[in-house]
Each structure stands twice: as C-alpha cells, then as structure tokens.
Length: 431
Image (cartoon, rainbow, N blue to C red; front, side):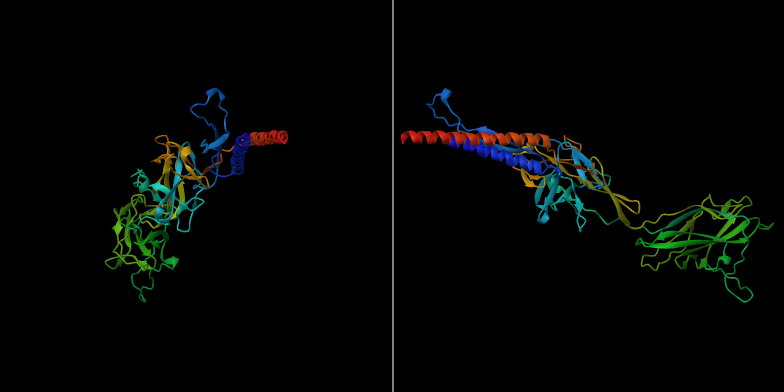
C-alpha cells in the first residue's frame, strides 16, 4: 500500500515540476499568467472504521489554476501594442464569420493585408460599434465588429470658394492689356509671359472626385487715379489648370482701390461661371473672395492668406487608442474618424477559463459567461496604448518552488525505496 501512496506523491511532484518549468519557459511571453498546482489528500474510509485510525492513501492534483495578478508593463513604439491596467481580457474572434471567440491578455496586435487588426494567431480584435462622436451603440458580445483600418476617409468636396488676402504694390507699373491681338495693339495678356502681369499667386483646389488642380491668380494693374476716375484699377485673371475662369465669356475680376489703398470693389466674393474640369469630375463653380484685408500699399507683392474650402479624400496617417479604448484614425485631409471601442470582458471566475495557448482562453461552465463592457467601467481596467503586459512569472519564486518540488519528488522516491527494503526484509524472513 505504501508503494502506491508514495507513487501518488511522485506523480504530484512531477506535475508540479512540469508546471513550474512551463512558468519559467514563458517568463518572456507577453500576457502570460503563471500556473499554480493545488493538491488534495486521498482518504479511503468505511462506516465502521475508527476515525482515529484513518491513514491517508496519498495525494492527487486537484487543479492547475492560472494566477491572474497584473504583470509588469513595458512601453513600445506601436500604437497597436495594448495592455490592460486592471481586470479584463481583449476579445478576439476567429473562424468563418468570427464564430470562435477567445479572450486574451496579450495585446501584441498587428495588421493583415486586408487591414484587419489581429493577434499573433490571426484572430481579429473586436470593437464595440460607436456613433461618430464615440458613444457606444451596443455592448453585446454578438454585436461586436472586427477592427479594420480604412485606407481613405470622407467624401471629396469640390472647391467653391478661394479666400485671398494680399497686398498689391502701389508703385506697380501700369500694364495696358488689350483683349485681342491686332497689329496696332500687339500687347495681349499671356500667363506664360511675366511681362504681361504684375504679380501672381496660386493654390490647390479640388474637383468633385477629390482630384487636385492648380488655381493661379494673375494681377494686372490697369490704371492709376485721375481726376475723373480717382481709383487704382487692377484686373485679376484666374486660371484653373489651363482653363481661364470667365463670367458670360468675359475673363478677369475688376478690382478697385481708393486713394488710401483700401479695396472698394468687389466687396463680396466674385463668382465665375461653372466649368467642367478635365479630370473627370462634375462641373463646379468657383468664387474668389479678396475680403477686406486685401490692400494696395507701398512695398512688394505679399500674400497674407490663401485658403480654399475643397476637401480631397484623406489617406490614413495614424491610429490612436485612448484609455477608454476608443480607436480613432487620422487622415491626411485633417479628418479624424472613430472606428469603434475596444471590447473587453471579465469573468466571475477567471480561474475557470480553459487555456488555448498564446496567453488566450475560452470560457467554460466553471468560468461563467463573459461580462462584456467598456474599459474603465464596472470594474474593468483601462487600456494603455503603446504598452505590453509582460509575464507575471517571478523567476526567484519559481526557482525556489522548483527546488521544493524536487525535494518532494526525492522524498517520495525515498519512501518507495524504504518500502521496497521493508518488503524485501519480509520476503527474506518468510523464506
């Protein structure tokens, strides 16, 4: 009988050493939680047995449980490296249609060729759907969506208004442009000839498809003040690409400044006729607004402001995730889009979870149903972007435990050896 009793001790010590060895081997595994073996003694009794004469029958492994204490965090350079400060697990799904749900503390996520955010096993990180302002629409596990990065964002908007604030030189020479070339009037405006205009400036405008086009304004001084006409007169010729903007076939914006250099005309944005760009976009109308800040003063031509209201399609530039798990994408057109909120889950009994490898788990009847919620609420921890949770294995503790398990194994082996010696002595007596 003592053989089998000691044998259970050997098996238990061997299981404990294997568990400790696994802990030590995973000291560098992100999100790993150390395991601990729980033993229980084996007692065999009968109703008529004296309770003061009961001898144990050995030991058995009752459980190998995960210890979910927080592991240390380390910083990284990736915004998709996530750690949970407190309780909770990331929710990831795999399989056709995402039917297999796993829970993990390992927040080392990456992006696939299809732009899905996945863990090291290719399972997709789950988000709660949100409104555009970041409010969660549903925290039900079945309503989560896979995190996916968009390539572009926003509907392009054709430019309708260009605002310009500039100073035109008061001492600029008068260029007497003629609308049509004739032998007696050989001077004609030519945007490729700098001698036919006094100054120019340009900006980028967009068609309805978001295609960029160069818009250039050329300023030509027409006349200086006279007694009959006491204003400075200029003409602004506007080109988008190679197309000049017109109003009923007539080009240019007639500009007038008083003797103090204040712009008196036009006093409102100047609209041109709609035109169809060669880029394939829809026809759109453009207006130029020189505002009240455009002046004619001493000094060279200078530009204080030029802006337009068109919006191209934005290209993805960066991803950010705040402590509440809100994931936002920033685009080159200045737009910021909320993609969702990282879905976290807790369990009534985390030690009842079943390990599936790579610091991930699935629910069991012992763990209870997952309690899904937002980070920072209802006891769920917050999210640290640009951080990873390291293993919670303490090498010092594990090595000491390994020595104790080894001694335990040796003691049980000695018990078997002793029992074997006693059995041999008894056999020798009988013989």
